[in-house]
Length: 85
Image 1 (cartoon, rainbow, N blue to C red):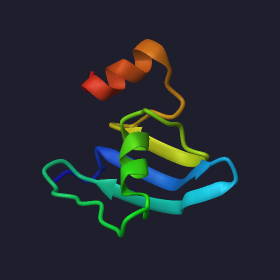
Image 2: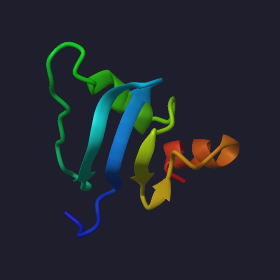
Image 3: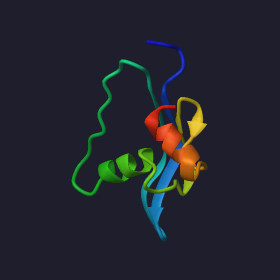
C-alpha cells in the first residue's frame, strides 16, 4: 500500500438542514485496502456513500479522491474525478 490514501475524508460533516447525520469524521482509504462502513439503521452509512460518490456536498470538511476535492468540483471535473482521470 502507498503512503497516501486514494480516498481521504477530513473533518467531514453531513447534515440535512439543521439535522446533523455525521459529525466531523476523518479517515483514509489506501489502494488495495478493504474498507467497510458499518452502523445501525439510520446511522449515516448510505449518507456517507452518497457524499463519497458526489451526490451531495459536505456541510463541512472535504472528501478527496486521488487528491482532488469532490465536494468543490462541478460538472466535467466531478465526472473526471469519479471516473478516475
